[in-house]
Length: 447
Image (cartoon, rainbow, N blue to C red; front, side, top):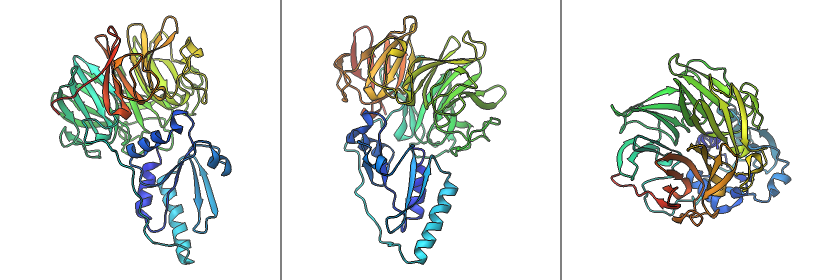
């Protein structure tokens, strides 16, 4: 996913000489389904062909070992290069430019334009498009309407009271209606201040809800492919900030692309890595030595940072400054990079699949078990993990919690005995009434 913006620029620049073919060799069971891949192609506006390599035939034939791997193929069909991992745009551009010049010189290129029939969403215009995260405070819901590049502010019954962002892709600060974002995700509210993880822009933004203005407080707008020690928040490039949590003047951010959690001291105005070495794995210990894997969700309660790592399907904790845990990372659920499943059990005997969201309840954590299409609960005293909503089938059925269906829920918020769910692939906000044990769909009005 991090390569898509670079590929898009290269496809446009070298449209007479470059063809991009995507091969999807899935790690997770859910990702093998062609309909899920089609949804992702639409969601991320991919405009080149994508092959579903569900059985790893292409992977094995081509000797692939890592995600992502880039293969370079000449006009005669011969492999002339291979690169594992992400590649900076400048280096990518130089390689393609050199190849284009060489093959043009020997007259091997055919500049005939290629046309594709692009996948397109079949649904009619809808209020939400792939909502990613959701936040709640003082009777307000904040909904990251990610693919509409905006944040909606509603009451708990779904009446829209304000909209942050014009809906256009961009990085503009200013009045709500003139400002712009790119696939915003996690948020944290503090009175009339809303912090926003502007994921695709690799920025952290701040919305002044009283004065209706949006501004940037961290990031340069460019994705970092190297790890920094920290410094001035507006001088340090970030890497896919996906969620936020505030505690004692420090804004913690899940930097999914770095496999780290960063800390932004709002008083000193400095930002730096907080937890994780940057190596993608699951390893507990001191925060400077622990290893994380694509942290997607954050919550803080009583000084403890609870987070979910999607690539290890894990639920973990880290101590904040002065907390009882100390500055250490500890895993509650999850065992390895390739360990996942759908098993309700106790602590590490339980299995999840690509979790993306977490919310704090009374003595429990609520978990968006995204690829299992379920909402689960972890009892923090007993360690028991149980499914509280979702049959496990993909769908958008309301009704009793055991029969209700979701489609890759990603964000959760808890308030007044109800769990609000950003049901991402259904383009809906769902509501779980914990007392009545029913799931309903929140109807948005006034938009």
